[in-house]
Length: 142
Image (cartoon, rainbow, N blue to C red; front, top):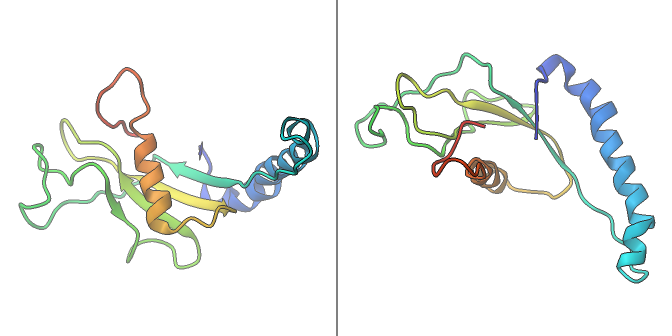
């Protein structure tokens, strides 16, 4: 997961950062890992996701039903149709409950997916990772 990349930088990031990860993975597959795996080859797969926290998107429930205590959509709410890119694998995720005001979604772009995750799988993994903060018992805004 990577933050701080604008859409105009996606091609550069794929050419440099994603390629660097691929190069390291290729080196590892023939190096120390081959020794540890007793001669068997191993080639790690890469999934590279860019997070954009600074966006202007806001989502509000149309009905009372999906609201949380503060009137926002519940944590874990995903938008992956209608307003997302037609050419990129992207989605919005409201990863935390808003304590005050409107919850701010994060816009995620999957630049590389060698694991062949479905949209639902990568969204579930992304949301699950929001619970990995040791000092908090609820999900956080990633």
